[in-house]
Length: 267
Ligand code: G3P
Ligand code: CA
Image (cartoon, rainbow, N blue to C red; front, side, top):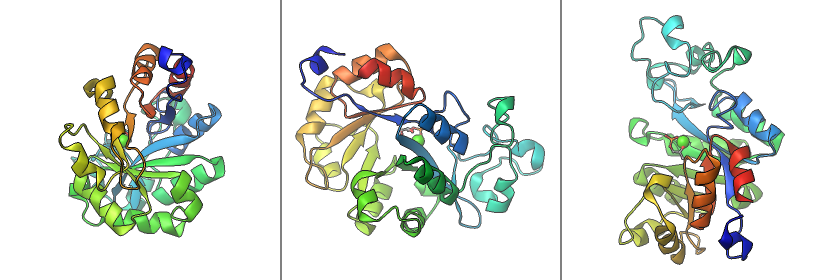
């Protein structure tokens, strides 16, 4: 434990499995959330985007070719943008073989499929609205799907859901449409800018490469959109020494591909 933890100055950070436990299973698949569950990790991070026919799917890149076999299945569809494919087309893709033969046949899940799996696993969700500038209306559709599956019920909203984005306008839109939902802004606003962010978000979630103990303290001094101290969840920290260092900064959470390593290094 860090000195601060040993002295009880702050709790161990919450550990978020980034794109699932993505060091151990293909990112953003059901196998990756199951891998996190197998490690006893109860928070998973994902990325959502909209298909051509308006279905929310869980995938990180705005193109399909890094994490699926889209180039082989649809050779004439370069650059394989998510927004140019229907959900039925995306459902045909193999999202596991690139990671390892043991994961052949893993699919790009719809948000609905993903929610069913994490509900079964009793996991919590840090949902990222990815590249919102490409997807007008993605906030409303995300909230609609979440509501349909009970994720905007009081218990879920209070304890089990955070919606974050690199797009400040997107976070503002979520906050305006569902003020009860906990939100996060992905980035590192200056200290002078922080109060304007605190009006619509509960968390400032920066790259670990951009922060130190002073910045974390400045953020946590302020109250967020729900009147509680603004939190800091930092990403993407995959090794034990760095995890111990950022835990020493007093961060509230660490987003990691290796949740077992980070948990063991910070508790
Ligand atoms: O949750 C933080 C992290 O996911 C942000 O970066 O590119 O992995 O979506 P990225
Ligand atoms: Ca993400």
